[in-house]
Length: 524
Image (tube, rainbow, N blue to C red):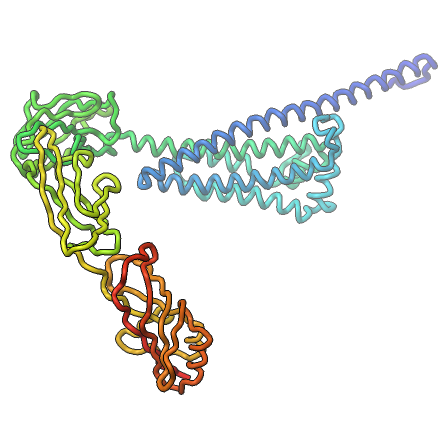
């Protein structure tokens, strides 16, 4: 204000001017606070969209890695590391922001003009001129993220710009104020700032994290796809309607690239069939494949070799072709085999396969006593009485010709089961155990070296101690009478479990052969 003596009127005018300036400053401060709040909202919306893109990217990459692990497995591993680092820092910052906003009344959450206090972070991050443990943790989290990301991408020429950006955006070195004084990074950015300004800064950090993740993931995949799209990365495949052909039948197979694309056409073809060059009328190029118009030839294996020539960057790139197919004679008999053995067993479900080479399963049928179809070429045989069963298979060839053949299988009974105690059968001798263990052990029965997994339910047995009456037991474990007889047996004495009664779990009507007894040598 002007010096010298002022009139009362001039003093009043000067006072009003000061009040006016203060009011302008107050309004400007509130407008700035609102601007921070609106900026925070926009950043939050951007973060949500970027996070959705990153999530979709990781899901897509996971699918690619599962389908093509050799091509995308390494990329997926590094992408997971980047995603983990980003999610951990993002979650940490989100927790800090949640604690900050807990100091604001819920109804004032969007009233940014009242969020002008710096108290929360000043008290949380700082202790006088030093950083508090919480402040040190905040800086450590950022340092860990920065060094973790750089450890994954640094040194790779594809990520030079991103690495430099990470070093800049997530640097925590001291900052220089306008007066030239160096200030601790955390103090420079967060000490004394309004709550809404600090919230916005942290949201911006989250945006930097998500954007960095997006850029790294995109660059990773772009590099891998560029390599995959190069013609040097292609393999040729032989596409055919079936795996084998009849002698003299037209062969309808074609050579295709691993990435089948109508726009992918070779500029030149050099192929041979069994060493003889193919002429232009023996193949056509269509729908991204080289279709072969040849006869399947005589019975046996046939070799297709040569090159598909493409132009890439003005240079010819040769894709080698090395494929084969087999031509077989027309069958006149079915092939029938038991999946597990050359006989069928009475009392169990015997899995069988009935098929005729060159004829689809839906054109083949089979019949026999006890035979039932499961699906496709799979059948189940449940033999009844007798010593043999005959199975008849019938099929229709593509040319309408019918084929029928019979096959005879021997029927055998289930072998004699062996008794067990505590799951042991003594292996030709006696099972050694203490009498206390015998009292609580279960009696069982097994079929050693039998090709089927069969559950046998023991329903009773007899227990014999030398010099004492035989005890009849119902169930799998010893009753009180048997336990009493056991207690009277001497140390080292051998007791016997015999006449074991059992049945098949899912076929109680089948009568098993007599079960071998099991003996136990008492060790106490």
